[in-house]
Each structure stands twice: as structure tokens, then as C-alpha cells.
Amino acid sequence: MKLSLDEIKKAVNPVVIKEAGTDCLYGFSTDTRTIKQGEIYIPIKGESFDGENFIETALNAGASGYFTNDKNKIYDKAKYIFLVKDTKEAYLQLANFYKNKINPYTIAITGSSGKTTVKEMMYSVFKNAGNTVKSNLNHNNEIGLCQTLSELKEDSQYLIVEMGMRGFGEIELLSKYSDPDVAVIVNSGSAHIGRLGSLLNIAKAKFEITKYLKADGILISHDNPLIRQINDNKHKTIYFSLEDKELEIIEMTSEFSRFKYKNQEYKINCGGEHNVQNALSVIETALLSGLNPIIIQKGLKEFTQIEKRWDIKNINGFNVINDSYNSNPESVKAALKTFLLYTPNPKTVVLGDMGELGSDEEKYHTETGKFLDEFNCDYVLTVGELAKFINSNKNKTVHFENKKELCNFIKSNLPKGSNILLKASRFMKFEEIIEELGKN
Image (cartoon, rainbow, N blue to C red; front, side):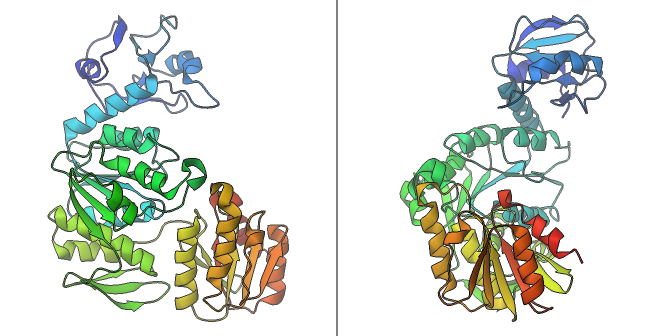
């Protein structure tokens, strides 16, 4: 992202304290460690740091100027000093101005689970239709949005942004500065219910994605009764679900799915009904955006899962499926169903804590144990303070105090060739199980 001085002033309307250089195009940086010569420094405040304390460091590293919300922070070395009320908002305004200058067709995606998968699926399809920019990794907050918008090029045709949230107002803010053409609600479940208090509140927070949806924009949402309840119908809405009469699942394993939808056949290199449902949101978005079904078929077939999302590896003779990027009651049940229905024996489930479930956290873990009673497996192995409430009456359940004990049990009791599913919230660090299993 590069803007001229006039464009900076139009975007942010700052108080210009100092302007002593020649006008050209300027880049921006929020990190003094990677700032380039001539860039303008934007100090961001966080919970445990204040970028304003590093303005002089940025100038010494080559910055030509900086933004600040403190009129007393004046450094002679700077060519440009811009005073603003909020530096983070200034960054958002600059990124939005630049985005509108490029004017890509913008798709915004949110959901309680699966939004990163849908974003990657969406990118796999749209990159075959034109130059496409997407949110990287977990860049789904306001700083991540700015970084994503900054990566747009003059010839960028499509922009795909992922929007995360932990409370009210966060998705609305992201919607405001991305002003999408299409808003996609992948699903609305119980993730973050500990913060928002109810499933209805979670649905309301997800629906904030439509707040700044363009007047002629389209909402594409999972057919959730709570979304239908709060939908103000200001925008054309398309609902998708596995119950759609135009959907026919032809073949499914734990590694791929083939299905027909609206008279076209598609294949995705991931198993599970939930991933078919994810693909429906992509298909609907692509069709409504004018893409040819052949491009959609090609893009979905090329899609591959990203790290810690159904990542299959053979470790010392065990077939380990790592799906521990994140975890909530809905995503756990989807993963368990896919694994237990479509993976051959012998198979073992390893479960850890699910986070941010509020006062009902024990109940949600207990319900997971009851859900397991619908299936057969060799063992249910649990580790974690909350996972100890997961108990299957039908399948042998063993709880462990730590991951090393769990791994020792696997090595001593499971036959080589066993299929093992790992599922837990990210803070459980289940990658340590993979490391431990890999040791001789």
C-alpha cells in the first residue's frame, strides 16, 4: 500500500504538525523491526505494548514520518508528523482508502467454525477467475484486515477477507472498513458463548457482517433459524444447508467427498458433511459472482487443507489426523462424525479441552461423551481439566493427567496402523502429542 500526501490527508484528515519533504508515494509500517526506508510509521497500542514508545526507533531505522495521538511527541528527525485521535483507526482509514482506490470485488467471511477453511476454498476458486488477495493465516482482526488490504495490487480483482470476533462490535468494525459486496456466514454455533452469553447473541454478533454490506450486496448464510430470526432482509439472502433438495452426496471418505449440487458434480479433497456444507457456501458465492461452474469445480478440486486442520501424517506407524487448530462443540462433533464413520479400524479418539464455553463448559464436554455413544471406536483418550468430563459409556474412555502419559499409553496399547484423531482447542498444544509420538 502506497499513498501520496494528498491521499493520506483525504483518508485520515489528520492535523499536520510537520510537512517538510517532497511529495511522492509513501508506504506504511507498524513494526520498527521491519520498517523500510522512507515509510511512515503507524504506532499501534495493544494490551501490553504501546507503539508510541518506539517512534524514535522507527525514525532511526529510516522512517520519514509518523502518526501520533500525542501532540507533545515531536521529533526533529521526522519530515512528516500527523496528529490523530486514534492511530489504529488511522491505519484502518488508510487501508480502506487504498482498497477503494483499487476497488476489488470483496467477499467477507465469518462463522463460529470453518471460516478459515471456507476462505481457503474460496481463494482456491477465485484465483482461477482473476488476481485474488486473501487474508493470510489468522489475520482476521482489524490489524490483520489492514495488512490484507495493504497487499492489494493495482490489478487485484477479488478480495477475500476472514472476520473473527470475540465480542459485539468487532465484526461490525471489520465490515465498516472492508465494505463487502458479499457477506458469508459459514455457521453460527457455540464458540465464544462464554463471552457472549447465548446462541442468539452469537448469531447477532455474526450478523454484524451485513452492517456495511453494499446496498446491492448479497448475504450468503447457513440456514440457521437464529440468523433467519434476526435477518432484517435489507439485502438479498441466499441460505445453504445439507438439507437442500438440490444436493446429492455421491461418495464420501475421511479424505475426500464427491457430490452433486444444482446439476453440477464437485469433488473436494477433504471428508465430512461439514466440509460439503462449507463448499456449498463457496459455490453459491462463486455462482452469484458470475463464475463459470467449470472454474468452481477446478478450484474446489485443487483445495488442500491447511496445517492442523485434518492434517494426516504417519508417525511411527500410527496414522494421526491432527485437527487441533481450534475446537468447539459443533466442530468436535463434525470431526468425530467424519472420523468415526469414514475411517477404517482400528481407530482411537484423543480429545482435549474446548475453551471459552462459559458456565456450561462442563455440560458441553459431557455432551461430547454422550455423542460418542452413537459410534464405535477402540479408545476415547482425554487430557485436560475439562476433557475429564468426556466419558463414553459405549467406548473405553481413559483420562490422563498429561500428554506424555497419554502418548506412553498409545505406544504401549495401540497396534501399529491405528488411526488416531487429535481434537482440542489451540491452547492445549496438541502438536506436543505429535512430537512425543515421533520419539523412539
